[in-house]
Image (tube, rainbow, N blue to C red; front, side, top):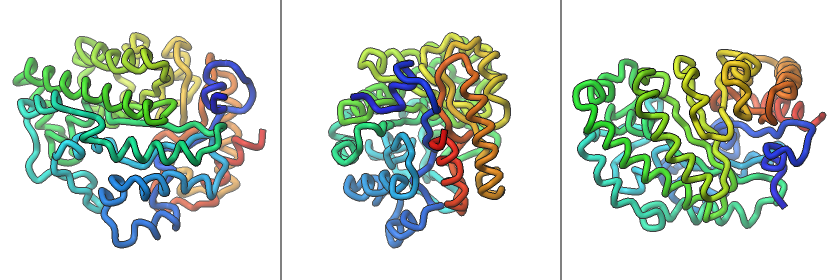
Length: 340
């Protein structure tokens, strides 16, 4: 029996939109903080027993419809030996950033050898998960992963990656092709180990020139999406604040588009011609700063909007949960979705 989320997306059931949240197993939970005490991020993410335990923490608090396994969008390059630190208030940090010519090493990617810890984590989660609850795999999209690896950390100007694009485009495109092939293998491996749907995070697509997206990147993404379709696995694509690219989105072969909080779901549905199921898009700032009552009311309004869209959709946030978000607010969101 397929989980409710997958049955909903395929139109096999109607009714309430399924609900889960990006970063739902994170620092806002006291139980997460207790496990994190004395451990680095990578010590947790590469230990299958700990990573599985963290992944399942939200189910101890809320009746979510899906679990996304605990890892990072940079787990693939980290597993291949790229030295990536997770620094407080900085995020991913590389003391020695890569250049596009370095990306040829992704041709050597072996899912089991380099990221076997992910497979073991997924196996462990799947074994203890109710069949009604979907297990979500994920990866960083090529542009976003390359942004971190080339810039060395999050950036405001993106001088290095845009400079690589403008000054050596053919080499840069080849670098992304190597990374995309490894990403497809990585996601397929996740599904072989228990993931039933995957999300591709393109957090920094907001910095991509529209011409490059249209001329090259759409086809590259579609290679990843086609690789998942060949395995019968639906794909959610999340491109945060990338509205300048939306005119090209109808060419994508993703199944679900995850929508940020800057515009309404209805606007995006119309703009994309009703081609995709949508996921979103309660503002995580509202989730953190409003009262539980206000969150519940906004969630109920959003659910009514989701039910009016062209295709079955998913209740989620416009991005990940912020640290120090009140647990009662998160519960108000989830219960609004489950109370229909």
